[in-house]
Image (cartoon, rainbow, N blue to C red; front, side):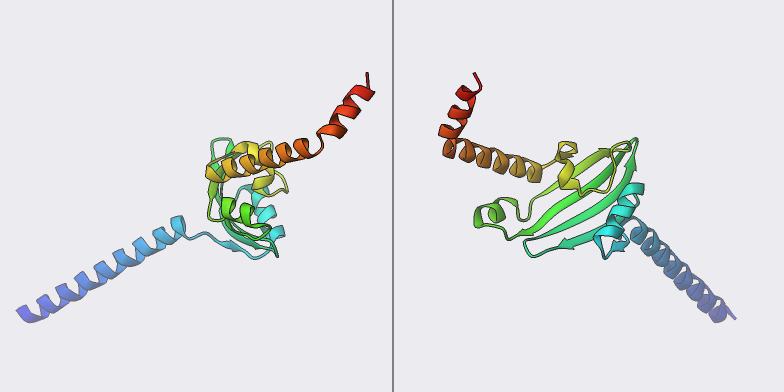
Length: 156
């Protein structure tokens, strides 16, 4: 009779351990595995509501990864990563693999991609985008300084 109790206790113990493992797996997947959007329109619809979702945006020139983390207070938190940029070598090297986190206020959320509202973002990707923009503006000014001077003096 003692053997049957031991076997029953072992079975109960194994079932309890299995139940705990399943519960841990369920809760871990709820927190760490985001539902996925297959299209940009799906992502933008979820962004309007700040629903937790992930999206991999691929085009001929770039691949971006987005994870909407949900609301924190009055801000929607979105993680963005430039997986690969193929436009030109300098831009690709500067941006590929870099990431940023965006904190977009509820009243600003719309049908745009996070990098289009960079003023709400923080991280190395934002810094690199801004650096590239400043370099391009500087180059434009240097290349067009004569035209800029003529149009400035012509207005006087």
